[in-house]
Amino acid sequence: MRRVRKKYTGVRRRGDNSFEINYYADGKRRTESVQAFSEGEAYAIRLKRLSGCRIEHNAPSIGETTLQAAIEYYLNRTEKILMARTRQRSSCIYRHFVGFLARRYPNVTLASQVTVDLGNKYKDYLLSETSKTPSGINTDITKLRAIFKCFHTFRFVGENPFKQVEKIPKRLARPEKKYLPTDLEVKAILNGVKDDPSYEEITRFLVRTGRRIDETTRYEKTDVACDEQGNPLFIKVRAEITKTKDDGEIPLDGELAGTVSIALSKNPKQKFLFTNQYGRKITSTAYIEYCLRPICRREEIKGNITPHCFRYYVVNKLLNAGVNPKDAMQITGHIDIGSFLSYLKSTKDGIQRALAATKIGGQ
Image (cartoon, rainbow, N blue to C red):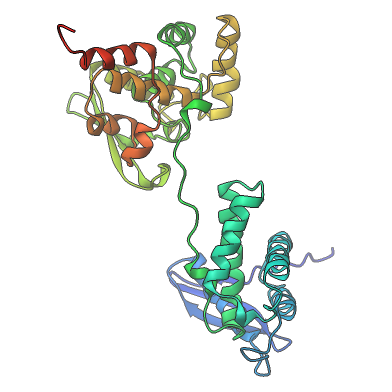
């Protein structure tokens, strides 16, 4: 029987906090025992050994390395560390940056001539003259930051210029691009999921709280805090499932507590709070495909309603009812007041109430 060689991983656990790492240096495989608290930390140590052994003593000094030579040196030396796709993406972004310098600043030919000011001008160029989204531009900045960090490690530049290039701030929500459902449409959706063994509880929860669907589907039964009689009091929101990476709580009233109680009683062996009739975790895609779209077709709702539309609905409902924004944000889970208020849409009734508030009597 032919022996199958075990795949080489580079890190092997030897004890609680002991790992064995393997890596190539000077054409030879080296083995080293290291102390680390996790396998990820051991991999980080191995990467440092790999990058360290690729720094040659006869590497070109600062002020002598051209941009072309720097990227070729970077790609060759990181071949064992980076995946092919990541390396190719980095190369494309870097060559686009070099092309920008060649057109605008032809005198910049060395890696050490790249400054923070040039990095900011490249970002402005991406913003004004390309069709890239803010997330795509931030990705380019992140890649260039990593490349020039490597240049700094290889002693091609004195410091990383892209380290000080600020990313584009997170843009606020755009309510005009989202459909704001009416009270009648929300009522039709609630009637459509009535007695639905899969989606009734999560729909009622979303309509009441306006929480994000990706966060809601990850609530676990252990996150629900109950009193001595087993009645739900609030839901603890773990930082790792939120968009802002902050802990929080969702207070529950009688109606919400009843909804959560039903969800808790379903599929007791499943750890997630909201599950379908088969005992599986609900996903946002399944919720749209098997719940919202069939109901919208059946009720002839023309608007493109998604789970995030409930978030717009709840924010507008709370603010139009005169609820303090700070109290409302405890329900919806918003952290930034500007982002919260960007969900508010003007209505004809609201404009008339605003005009009535400033009406001068007797004129």
